[in-house]
Length: 114
Length: 112
Image: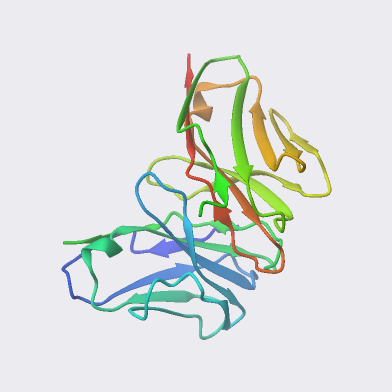
């Protein structure tokens, strides 16, 4: 079956602009996660959805970052007033039920803020 | 504070030999550990996992060992193949939070 998909694969924007990154999880997976990976580092947790609700958003760096999952499937990560420091690979993962389940990652969106 | 550490940024081995990748953690609440492999421009691919109630899990050429008293785990790949060349991430989670905590990664190069 289809894995996790993310669009766009690459996004280049200017400082101060608004961006949206989309994640389409594996069908039937109730848990969805967003991570951010900077060069030379491991992925860092941003936010975790169980169904439509954010179960844990403790990793969002500040209030410029927001994510939604209105129907419990596709999720959108939204970044307002982008800064150069937001440049990173944004990864989405899903798992069948959350908790201790294995998380399966998408290919990521490479965000570059000029 | 880095809760999961991979202290070797890189490792180079000869094809056919054993590759051993190491990972240390500090949080005793972690109850599940995973290894992911990542190729450039791709997302991490799940490789193998181990529950904290076990000390070994094997899947083909890949074996993960867990030493809870030392808070240490390792991934053994034998025999190593050139296609195994990638960045390997160790990750840990506590099932009551669900979020993965990753190490910094180790770049493995398997030479033909």
